[in-house]
Length: 446
Image 1 (tube, one colour):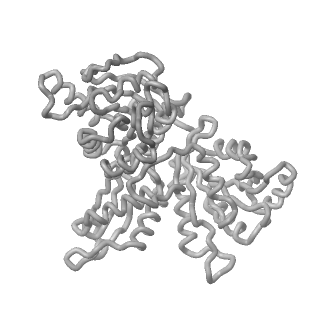
Image 2: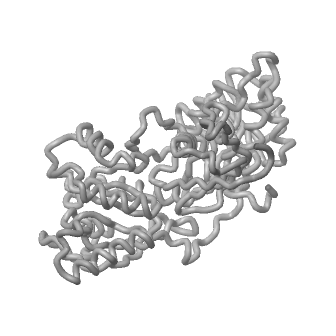
Image 3: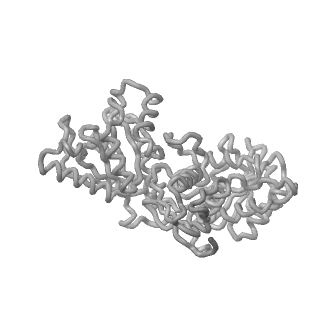
């Protein structure tokens, strides 16, 4: 990938036990509590969108980079070298993390050499500079031939000058075009508080609220924005009519309202499914969720009226997982449109899913993840022959579409497709974002 086409991506590299993950977590400080249907899903991702002083970029944690080969104490084995190269292939700038207490090690010098040869601009983050008196000790790392910045992940100090220097190296952010405006449909059963939620979100009575189910008859488009400047995220909120069971629709107006709500799902980039905290998810909630999945849309599940709930989140969340287990990858946020509880958190969840839906997975890292998944668990044989994976590339957003070239697409089985999707989620996060895998034949061997 040429330098001119690189995106706003920062890769973190370094040997073990220098605080690389701690720095990654410190910079990716915005975390959303996610309820997953699978246990043991990796929480520390390889990639996360980060905002620093209103500058937005992707941060890659190259977990495992710098592992010392068991047969060579001071070199990087071929697998680790491949990981470094994969991360640098897409990164516009890299951060080499070192440990002040260890001084310059042969491994630090090896990785620094790789960074210099890659042509990717690099900066050294000297971790464990826990107070100003230790900053001078960072000068030793100037031997690596890269700009040096003393930092402390533990005490959150020193990052401002480092990030300022790195961000200046990133390609400029682009102004969003009209086609980049994210359409967010607010859907749910009648009288779960969709209009009340929008009014609370906008801090004004933009739409009519009534205790009478069916007050909203048409889909209403409402502009909304998160952030400011060229990196602001622009939305069009769509308030929809409550979706009732087909058997309960008794007039042409309601049939039209349901049709418009379903069309709003189809036209949305992100869907906010609102449910009622006074009851557990109903069969109709499940049907609406299934419509979101069928439309391949990003989704946030919001449990409204939490001020009226008679249970706890610890008790309620597992029931959501059980009833709508196919939505386990979606953020679950408990709110009260009446009191304002967790409204800000719901905005963060929408913003987060919007970013996930629009994610571009670095090609090098994507292929490494697929290769490692294939090596760990091979696909079952079909008619005595086994599927082989050659190469993967992302070909679409909203939904995220990954095209994988294989020896014979007929050999893919649903269970292995689901396995690959779980692996992609465990590494890249992609909370709330649909992932579609396309398998294409490529003649190499059978």
